[in-house]
Length: 85
Image (cartoon, rainbow, N blue to C red; front, side, top):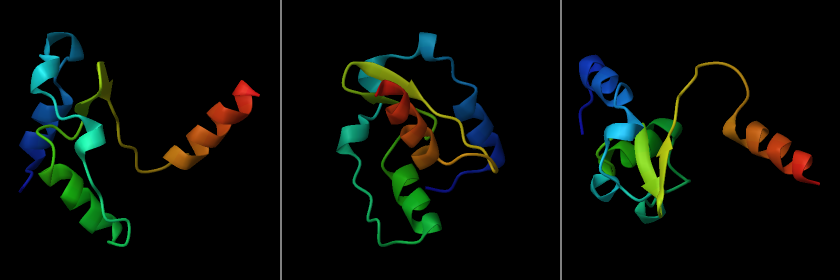
């Protein structure tokens, strides 16, 4: 899948209140080879979903944002889990 800047902006702009959950890719169906490079993993992810920003996890719609700097997903998950204890 070749993603242009325009296509990425179009995907990111989708309003989750206006999507049909049945048309979204379930994240549980995506398989990523963790031995690949980051670029390879991103390419694999993009090739397995219709929209890299909005997917589903079962009955839930998930919208993600990507940032160049700041805490990683692992950092965020660790902080979340510490708050649960």
